[in-house]
Amino acid sequence: MKSWFLASFAFLALAASSVMAAPLGSRHAIVIDEQTGDVLYEKNAADIVPIASITKLMTAMVVLDARLDLDEPIMISEDDVDNFKFSSSRLPVGALLSRHTLLELALMSSDNRAAHALARTYPGGLMQFRMAVRNKAYALDLRRTNIEEPTGLSPHNTSTARDLARLVTAAAQYPEIERITTVAGDLVEVGGTLQRYHNTNRLVSEPGWTVLLSKTGFTREAGRCLVMRVRAAGRDAIMVLLNAKETAVRTADAQVLHRMLNDMQRTQVMADLKIR
Image (cartoon, rainbow, N blue to C red; front, side, top):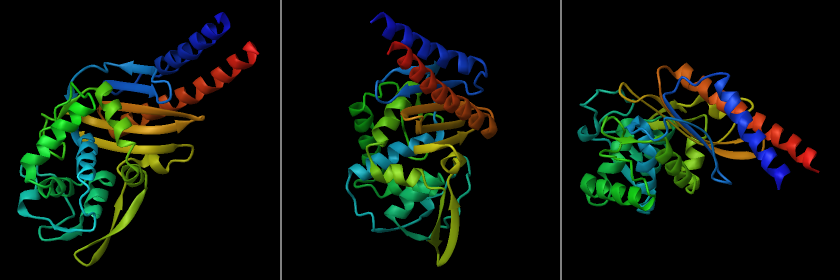
């Protein structure tokens, strides 16, 4: 028992030292071992902050829960245009796309018109969509999460790193969300023309990475955000990074945490060998 305790202590100590050696630029973060539920690293993980397009994971779950026809064509309307922050979109008003394609564009390339169209066409409209979101948040025990609209443009869409780790765990139960969020890109027909869309998280195609679920986010209030479910050295982990100043900072933080997971696995193997 004593040997096991010492091995575990060394295991967690290395995790802390790995990250402290290269402090994270993200203001809020958490890493959780999916199998054990252990928090391997956290930084200001209980602070309530804007979450930007991480919101779209909730939008996708609520839409999929409704078991709507994914092949149903949906037309982009004036209501889907962002008149709040005037974010860009390559989906013109009048474009007709399937619900499945809108899911793909909302999750993979974080298109705001696609996300809004999904919520607008939810049974009962936006009001019922918001009710479904509140019910889903309650069911997932996201007690410090508030989501008022489907895109993440509103600074009133807020949560904590800890709550978002639960959200990612829940989203991982949806094979379609996992598939869509981990492809590097896709060709999508819009208005009779094929357009290339890319994943907003380049790590999904980075050598040495196994990304099982991913979503980025950015607004001025939220900074650069990233949530992922990753596999490193045989370990599945949930990673949440919020409010980095630049995309490069967010990516560097993810790489630090990825190395931490790999270092922890090597230390655990060595500790196990010593115990034997």
